[in-house]
Image 1 (cartoon, rainbow, N blue to C red):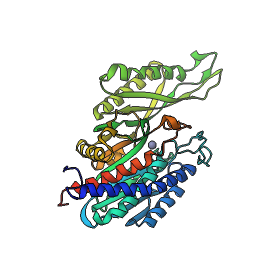
Image 2: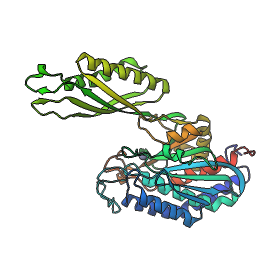
Image 3: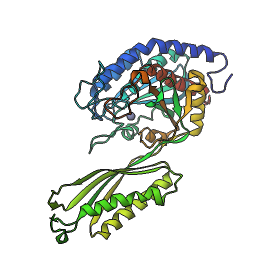
Length: 416
Ligand SMILES: [Zn+2]
């Protein structure tokens, strides 16, 4: 008997039933995922995906299906027969502006839009999980809330969206959510495996825009102006002293500039240079220190060259913090469901994930689902045009999500 299992007598029996239901639902999950893959939609434009998600939830008999949450989000409830807390499971639905080059028979039919981050799989896995849970609700205590979220990759400029807007639109309320789980596919991890991490798992993300202003001049007579291009070159180089010289070397920090835009000409020094970049950290105090150094270096380097710099230092998302106690419980559940050897610890990543917003509000735990299979060529990185995943991972995802929810509810204190 395990304190984490589903209780002494019911446990094994329930696990077997989950297993059978996962097997039954797998063809649907594969079909949904391929359909979403063929028809990807960009952030905050997930109209078709969201409509199909809502239709399928209604068809399988989910208890409440709310649409139009955070624009195209869908929130549904599977209510157990006995009273208890509510646990949430979240999937993201949006695709990326990438031209697909996988050659798959169900490749994207939308030019320059591709599910290159696997959100098609996340959505299909959560639909499959919903179907399993609906079948088991007579034996379930409490409720499972399913969050189908738009715009994880970030809404278009000037629009709100993603996890922040889901929370604002009440996705975690009524009934209030006690804990939340989510997963992301990972092409670096073998199919069949899941990886976890207690504490900081993915980076806090700052999104930065700078404008360095000088005075335009003839390229042949720079002394008549103030050159913002040379100043920007010094700024870009000087910023790399933040991770290497100013921050404790044992702390992960990345400072990157990805856009340098100077609209001069070969013989014209422009008035302004625009720089776009990002800072990634894992610790709130380090994040504060980096921001302070960043401002000092940019302003003073700009001043040293006679230019002026403006900085918009935007908070794009907090560190994804996995609640250590919830993660410990989840690891035991997953170990029982998938085999202990298939549940491994993940290294901290410098990518961001907006699941972090939910995990700031309620205890959360996020996992990576292995989709790597060299025989199938499922080895390419996320956000690249050749990214494919091993579909054998889909039922693993459903088993993991269903088990996490059921075990959480089965072991929650009775009083709630
Ligand atoms: Zn993603």
